[in-house]
Image (cartoon, rainbow, N blue to C red; front, side, top):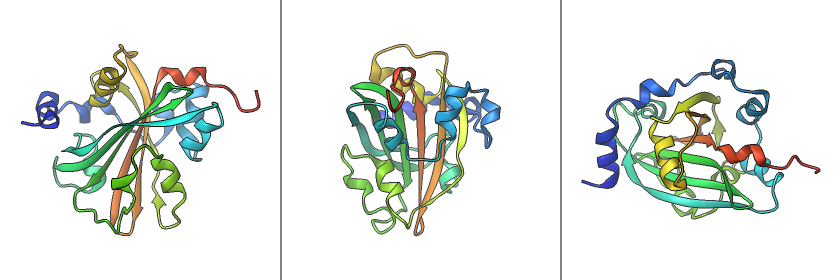
Length: 198
């Protein structure tokens, strides 16, 4: 049994019930500061780069793994099947500020997402926003509890205990016939970023 399969078995079916994804940001009771990050339509990479001296993408994993219980339906899978997943930390001046999780159905072709398999530590967001053939869906918002698999993974990578919940957003992208779902979890370090112009 692979690590991903073992984690999937341990998760049970809790992720779908503890995520609480919403189409409107009002449902997650975010502060004005967090609301600004959650709802901003510009590239998150660009916004982060404006607030630090050095921006870096740290790739954590890119592999086949079971889709999470709260995401398989979003990418048109009939049940919880294997997907290609990519997880990264976005760092500003080496401070981790966003944990990003991306999934692509295995049915997607190289023509759908020609860049996905060779991103390395380059920003996915820059690629998505720079391709006129990519169509962006509507943002969804959630307050993810520490029981959610993405927060458990983030805590393990950071080797720290996270707050009881963190704000997250996700968006579905389409290119040709391919679907790609990006979930961004905002980490506590975000609050220490500089304001542009200071």
